[in-house]
Length: 163
Image 1 (cartoon, helix red, strand yellow):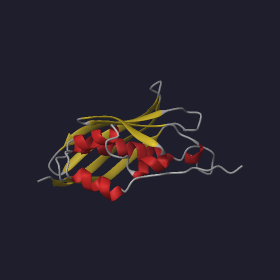
Image 2 (image 1 turned 120 degrees about the vertical axis):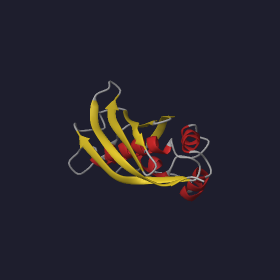
Image 3 (image 1 turned 90 degrees about the horizontal axis):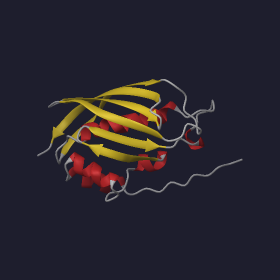
């Protein structure tokens, strides 16, 4: 039986332009609170920014069939995307208005399979280091009981520190 999924999103250029005028923490809080739209990737994959504080970000998703790979479980890319988002947003919380960064390297360990029976998952990101040129963060993907599904680390390069 064929299934259908409809996805709607807002103009990503307008969102990025708004982000350049705000401190990172304020930008992310505006997305979390619905004052700015979620980015298209969040709409496409069905996740949301649930928490954001300095050096801390949490994304939530409930895995479904639309996330499955050909072998009948959720594709590892969902875990990586959530963890990359959580870890990157930890860095983003420290960026001044006009600041820019990007992921330079990311490493993930998938420790158990995810299915549409797993229930809600939370990708919890924590900033480890924020320097002039390099930032690092770590993340954990857990279920409601705290069971670990994946963990990751990232290194980001700071491209511009605002101003």
